[in-house]
Every structure is written in C-alpha cells, then in structure tokens.
Image 1 (tube, rainbow, N blue to C red):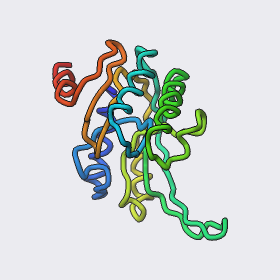
Image 2: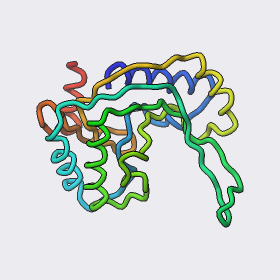
Image 3: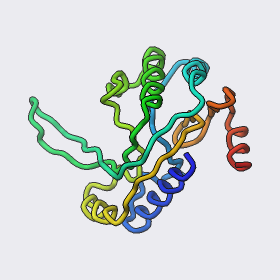
Image 4: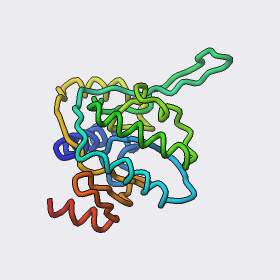
Length: 195
C-alpha cells in the first residue's frame, strides 16, 4: 500500500496517543483494505487457492483515498432502533472498477468455503472499502477524534500489488499480483524489507 500505508499507520498512532484509543493498536497495526472477513474455514489451502485463482487475472489494483467516515452499530427491537454507537473510524477507499471486480469475484468464491457472517460480501456495489484507523473504545471519544481529523485533508491515490491473508493482524501469506507468486510469511516480510 506504499504511501497509503504510511498515512494510515501515522493516523492510527496519532489517534492512539492523543485520545488513548487502544482498539487498533492492541498488536502492531497492519494498515490494510479489508476485502473479506473475518471468517473461519476448514482448509486454508482452499482459501489460498481462491486468492491465487482470482489474483492471476490482475497485475495491479488501483484505488484512491477520499477522507474519513465511520461505522455505527445499532441495536434494534422490533425494527425500531433503540440505541446506536459509533464504533469504527476509517479512511474511505474509492476502488477502481478492477478492484471492485477483484473483491467481488474473490468474495463469491470464499463465501462457498468459509463461515463468514458478513452479508455485504455478496454485493459488488454495497461493499464499503475502508482502512480502519480507530475502533472499539471510541464511542465517548468519537466527537473529539472526529474534530481532530478535520485538520487532515486526505486525498491520495495508490496501487495494490499484493493480496495479504491476515490472521489476528499478522501476515500469514501474500499473493503478488505482478509475479503471480504466493509468498509465505517469512518471504513476504523479507521482500517488504528489501523494498
């Protein structure tokens, strides 16, 4: 994610230090654009195979950053919202048509072999591309964080060359779109360091 990764990581740590928000830094943050998940599966090999199968059709995936937004969790009783709280602040990602298509193709395949409960995965246009900056313990601090983020004018473009499989924020595998190679954790980290 190049420059986007550095912007996201800086914002995660800025929010953490200024507002004491722990949700995104419980482990070392790995800024990423979520494409699918969370999920469980019977066979990780099948998941990796799906990533490679869909990834083989692409050499790069373009996107742009376009400011901030948030997710709100709502509790309902008989179709009436009884309470809501803002629980995630994120960088808005505007995907290229190729990135939209890639994510949709991948989701269709992974929905068949995983136990995800996220229903947005089966929609090409409703899926919200994002990079999380703060989550979980932000409800009471939301207004202050939101005001702070108004100081930033975030507009940037980026190119994705790798698809990463994360497990609890840790890189497990990466698929390189340009070389069509699957990298295990140590290979992926070595290649990142060389870059």
